[in-house]
Length: 596
Image 1 (tube, rainbow, N blue to C red):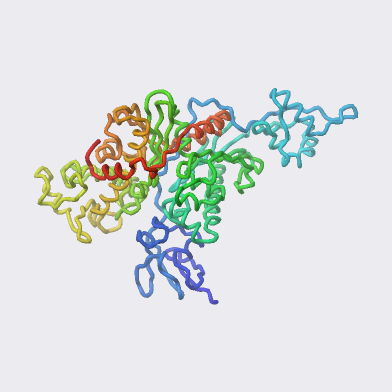
Image 2: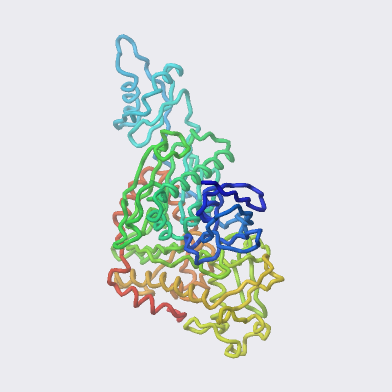
């Protein structure tokens, strides 16, 4: 069968395709990352490409190639994503799970015929005051290393196992990587395990986005394609290795000097990272394949650190509550006893933890991808050009990421826009966008020219064609308002279900931690105004940044924290929102914009 030739502009790169493949499949196989929030269902319209001859705009996920084509990519990946990569270890005792000890070994002679391994084990057991033994893989090169170094060696020890032996004193080079595997983004930190210093951080978008923006789309992909799981597993491993390479180059460190990597992600991301089946997570009763922590050698996953180094996947709780949520609980020091405390990590899924009154409860609610820019007419991720802050004064005042011309609306901007429209009276409590003749007289007359109609429904122009980067107006539509209502109602209903489970009310909350990039960048006042966050005092909200990533760093830097996070995961009780606790009724109650 004859291959088809595609020429990709503006790079003018030539790639080949097989008849019947979609343009999206061809591009994905060639390393191009198209935005496809719908997972290729053809509903989001964000994978548009231009066919040059005859000229037409098509959806890459729906167009099947049958002849040679020249196409132009309309959405570029050159924008800078606003990814939160703030790892820090202040206040943490540095006692890493991997440690190095340099010592002199007594050489064998005719009076001491112990094996090389036994004499090293005996020496280390005496130094550490506990039994130490060799991991089998570390035995292979050890005899030559010992003799070449005149028995002055450094042992690399993980827990009670010797995982490597090195010649001379190498105690000054001991590093680890903490990795946060988000559905949308990846963030990593290179840490000096001798002192807990954060040497560098790096971040990138999750390459799995080409298979869908949410976990359900990606789970479906593993069911619909025989090698779907392997494709996504390899994509995340390759992305991890790119981040490791970037960090090592920046700090002039060799890969073999990195001895540990800890990974935190939601349950689906952790399963795919481990190359474990995920289809069962996507269908009732939504059960995880595993929730325990996993420790393996780096070469088992082809992670490009020291091959004998350890990869640790943090423990989870349930099918939709993974190690990232447990890491948030660890970082924020949530406890069963003490004031009632809430931690929320809002993304495509909203993971919520409530601690106090003798219990730690957690749930996951499907907020949908609206807050990450999907299903919003001009939505986009938090990247250069995204509208991130909005205020309505005499005119619309807005700020974009990078302070450039606006390209679209990210989650924090969407919340601000809806809050401002609600505040001035452009939408009512039901979420209906009002016609201009229904507006309060207090709204400046200049706003009326911004109200137009699209698809038979009202829409407000935020930036006109002369102001936007694309030369087309950027709108907020009635459908966007509805998507926002669905997302915020899901989060608030999850919060209320947890509170009802411990017979508590909003007024009983002492503090609400906002985790993740979204929680870090949103305006709590706007989020409270639309009913996304509880109606409590603003000083009770506390953004905690990338708490999941910091949890991974804590486990990396302090070996006792691994057992602590395992215990914490076991203490956390998962509340299934679909399990007859009235979630749907509560969800419908929060669809409106009444504060509560």
